[in-house]
Amino acid sequence: MRIISGIQPTGELHIGNYLGAVKQWVRLQENNECFFFIADLHALTREYQPRSFQENIFEKAVDLLSLGLDPEKCVIFIQSQIKEHTELAWLLNVITKVAELERMTQYKEKAKKFRQNINAGLLTYPVLQAADILIYQTDAVPVGRDQIQHIELARTIARKFNNIFGQTFKEPKAMMLKEGAKIMSLQDPKKKMSKSDSPQGCIGVFDPPELIKKRVMSAVTDTGKGIKYYPAKKPGISNLVTIFSLFSEKPIKEVERKFKGKGYSDFKKELTDLLVKKLELFRQKKKSLIRREAYVREILEQGRRRAQSIADSTMKEVRANMGLM
Ligand code: ADP
Ligand code: TRP
Image: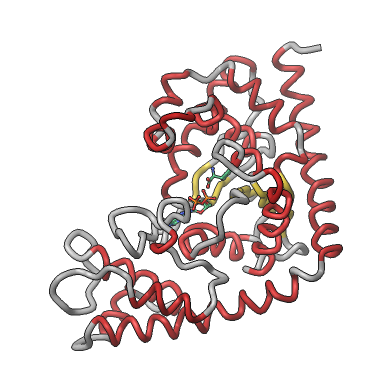
């Protein structure tokens, strides 16, 4: 299968991004034709620092490599270097209904949050995302739960385009994990873990051990006791159990059994140790990669070339089918 997914360069990668998205990517690259990119154009829709932006983009590429993406097994590139994404986004804009975009949960949330700066890019964000996906004739898109609605919209747009202009795009499928698709904030387990919402509620994948400890030990738990997975009544502890289960690769039932009769603080100590141990590998890898700038740039250049050739061939067809000269 051909697979594509992207991640924005702003904000540090947290364990929600890892468990919901990147961990799947690492697995999928083994048996599929995979494309992963840094969605720098999407990141422009929020306030950002132009001076450090290039650095953020480069660092995000280093991050993905540190987490296990292998340039021998997948294509890694930067969205804005393939100009056809924005060209296709414009063309798809003209067949997308504003009402459909206004219905998107992410748009509604952001529009509420950034009331003074609802730029048009926030609204058309999913159209660019559809272009990212459709231009590569993608079969499947692995993402966390918050992005499913955008992938569904990409499908709708593909179908509509094909109906109007003739068969041009594949209809992509969303791909989501059963567990880990939504890791919750450690401070407010009713909300998803998100760097921009609450840094205290996040654990960064490259955080040092002391910080990991601090974040886990101060994580909100629920009244009562017992290490139980019961999201409706015990969202805090359930989230921590999920994290433990995914990092230890043990089923939730087994985690519950392991901590039977133990209290929150024993469990949190073990969770801290587990995270410190697992994340240490990523930290080491990043330390060495961040110094190999030329190597990383070469990977991105090769990725750019491979992505460009597919984008070119799809766009040729799109232009012809839409009647452009
Ligand atoms: P963020 O939402 O933190 O700004 P991105 O939008 O760049 O991060 O998301 C990158 C990927 O990580 C997407 O596939 C998204 O669905 C996934 N993701 C983000 N937050 C979480 C979370 N809390 N739990 C699971 N997956 C997540
Ligand atoms: N919007 C996605 C996010 O915030 C990132 C993204 C952009 C993406 N283009 C994509 C994900 C295409 C999958 C496919 O997480």
